[in-house]
Image 1: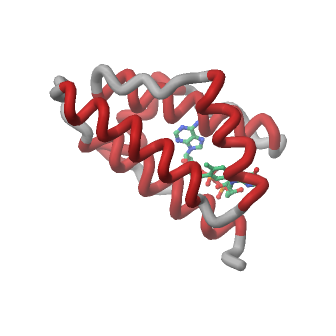
Image 2: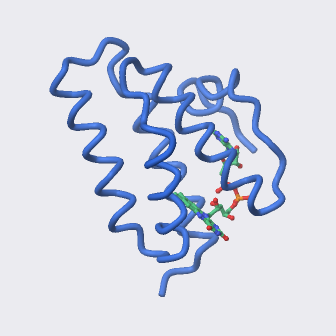
Length: 106
Ligand code: FAD
């Protein structure tokens, strides 16, 4: 199976990058599609115990797809939930756009 760490880092990069290019004012269809994408992504995520927890997270914390910023912050919160579980530091979600739209190097 894929390495959970490499898979995770690549997946967060993809997810946050998608949020950063999601429209600032999405149409109803784009909002519906984004919800569906997140649900399908969670269902097919190739680390079953990660997928299990992520699906549970989505059920109690519905994706906020109304604007680009709401999606970006929702994803940041979801990522922080995993950070907490793994004992990693909490990311400041006011910085999500700087990190994933404008970009910074680590
Ligand atoms: P990552 O957590 O991969 O983060 C990459 C970069 O994103 C960071 O360097 C930082 O710049 C930025 N970042 C950090 N936090 C945030 C945030 N909150 N918002 C925005 N940007 C941020 N691993 C497990 O061991 N068990 C699990 O159950 C598990 N579940 C996962 C569920 C999902 C949906 C995903 C995508 C990954 C999951 N992972 C899980 C993997 C885990 O989250 C990490 O990706 C992995 O441990 C590698 O961590 P990393 O330190 O390289 O940084």
